[in-house]
Image (cartoon, rainbow, N blue to C red):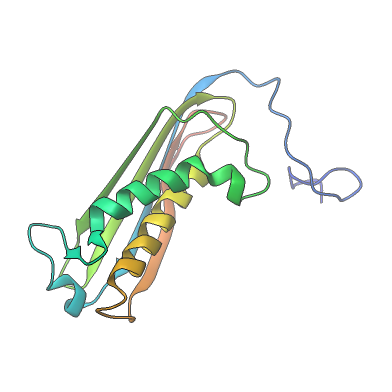
Length: 157
């Protein structure tokens, strides 16, 4: 159990103490690939779909940003962070799939990987919600961290 940072010596959950860490610039980028299907994609005009609920991608981007800001409320051991920036982009990858990217930046004592991953997930969930009247065959195919900078190590996947 000693390899897990969120478990104390008695085996109980704990939030990691970051008070002795230095403040550094930290970034994380996550990516989600989502299958929408031809039926949904064919309804897009100029990389946007307007439904009775509003513009799908614009609404999903706003939801993803909200998700980033609320990550510590959703995941128990995440620290509340002062987010410096969030940039979410959605690209139509082909006639069936989209790619969602979420980059999060802070100056802080802990990383923002969970925030970036939450951002892409909430973005995709919002797209699903707004497009489910067209098709309920949508699938989150892959969600992954593709880059992290700052802290002890940098990662590029």
